[in-house]
Length: 362
Ligand code: FNR
Image 1 (cartoon, protein in one colour):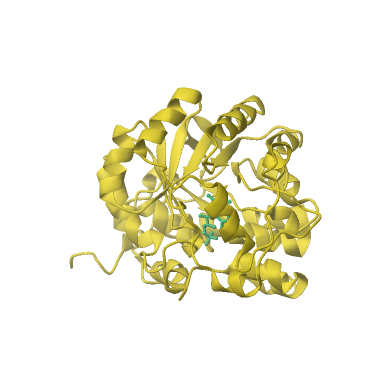
Image 2 (cartoon, rainbow, N blue to C red):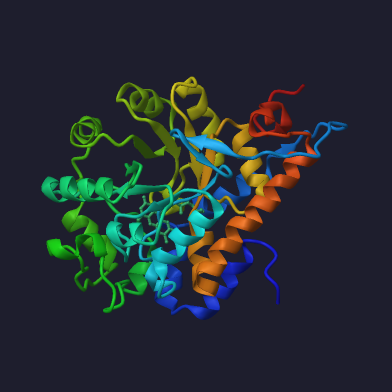
């Protein structure tokens, strides 16, 4: 059966993958309220299309941190991609590059920064988890820089791992033939067996819970790469991020895998955009599955979006071909609401092209 939208890859992945792997990819935290809300909140935002505008030419190219990309749709960091497909992060990197967009590589990738760089040219960001051992972090950042990565996405929502109950039940652990490749030489490449989620134990042992805004300064001192703060959900933190010299913000709730009952990212976006006052770009991830979702995020002020699960599901289903198809389908889908609401370029997408349930009556 032909796959006609991004969501359909989830069912295929579920059939193909061992339960432990699929559950790890799919899970949200605890009641998974935020997981559902990440999708539901998009469905409460409606269009206010403008008509009779010449839309024979549509341009969705954009610039992110000075890098020109073909569309405002990018790839979020997701860990352990070789658990989905033997080519894992290699396939994702090639697909992103072919689509002319940005891939973010996870700290917990099953391919190293050097290996991903070896796949060929492409604009890539590196997602950073800060370990207790700061020498490890400094080394890793330097390696990412040398491998040509263009920005650091500093994940700030994970001083501890959220409770993902499927992973606890499954005693989630990496298959024995895989390692956290970036940490292999540092004796931090494998997760120990645990009597709950092996990943939760690994995080408790290695990740630095003391991480604070001062460490954003520390990071700036050890790298020239621009820093995106990933995991902001409030105006308060947006203002601090701007003051701290962040190059951008990613409004993210970690795909609803950390704190349950935080709002959907699309609901938090506008607050963050207003607080950023145009000083730094604001991006969003979480629940983006349709071109219309991309449009809604841009109408609320996002400079671009990232997708997480669709990539791992497509990898599981069809490897690089699947990821290419996901990017192409979202691109094609996004072009349509642009045309059908009278927007020929990204800058023509405005707040007036949508109506939310928190809008005052017109
Ligand atoms: C993630 N996410 C994530 N984030 C991060 O900063 N480092 C990481 O290693 C991972 N790993 C990871 C694994 C899996 C399986 C998922 C689903 C998510 C979060 C990710 O970057 C992003 O915030 C969400 O995935 C976006 O939501 P959607 O698109 O999955 O709904």
